Length: 237
Image (cartoon, rainbow, N blue to C red; front, side, top):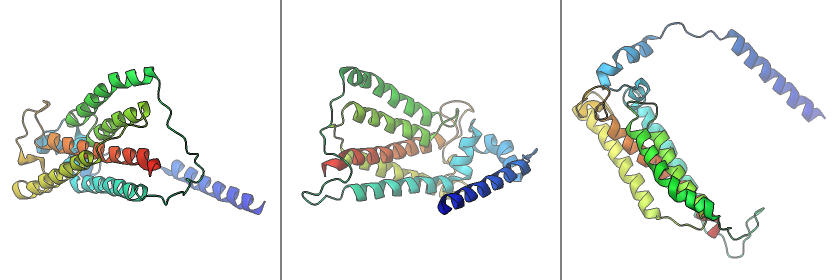
């Protein structure tokens, strides 16, 4: 009884804190200095029609590198934990050993039709990230969802770990290389002006941003795919 009372008291206190924050919140009516610079100069500096892309990929490129690194570490930790072989005869606690049920013909046929479209849409999202809402992380997640669909249609399906790992490694290395080239040839890490900015609003514009987003999309897609494949195959160990 005392524990419930303390829990309710804590929840009530947190609720009062959030209510106070909400009532005292007043949105800014004008942009601050940094945001004003982004809004006024992003097109001139980067050639990208999508200001959010310009901020994420160029102005705050180191932050993006950190986010990609966190995802890489997560995929690595999941792989290290789940690829450890279980001692012979050790049961999986709370999970009954069952053979994977085969999916129906409808799901298998639908998967064959949808997977190419999902992959195409994922590529579209990160290739056009400098023009429309989207980008490398979103496109990479969509690519990985195609693999998830394949696993749902056939739980026994196995994928080439080496190929996924190579795609992730090569795209990550090239991403860092482009960032360093920005330091050497332009104004800073991941500066997109190492390539011509091109005509504003066209596919081949915004300098190196489409290339950067393509590499991020492949890297994120490979990392998510690696985690899903590892999770799918973990019960076999």
